Amino acid sequence: MPVNYIAVPKVNPNNLSEPVKYYAQVVSNGDINLRDLATEISLISTLSIADVTAVIEILLQVIPLKLTDGKIVRLAELGYFSLSVSSEGVNTAAELTSKNIKNANIKFRPGQFFEKAVKDVEYNKL
Image (tube, rainbow, N blue to C red; front, side, top):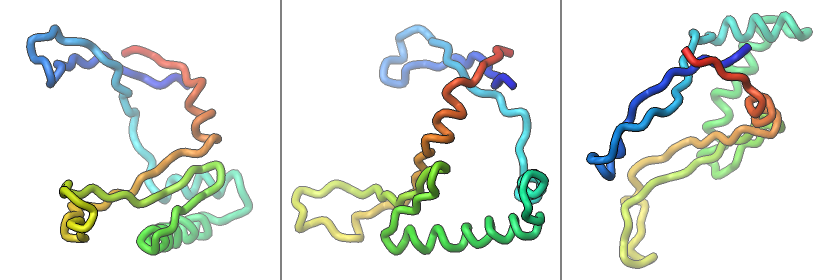
């Protein structure tokens, strides 16, 4: 099934005098919630909806714990999660303390399976 997209005009924020350029933006056709996802998984596996939901709920608890423990969480072909931080710059390494850290972010890097799945996507302009 092709992915729908639209043309979106954007101005170069670094040079407002440049002409507007158009860029592709994916148009979503809805979303899927946890229960519906668990239902679909249960239909193609031997697991019940409750089993699938329980595993996902446990992952939601365990992954953040492992990230804050300094681990990179690798989920095979699915991809991996890692923790990153942004901080204020200081002049020397000795000056850098935890007080300079502004926030933490969870990064997700898709695995090869996901990369292949979207590599050959067909597109449909709306």
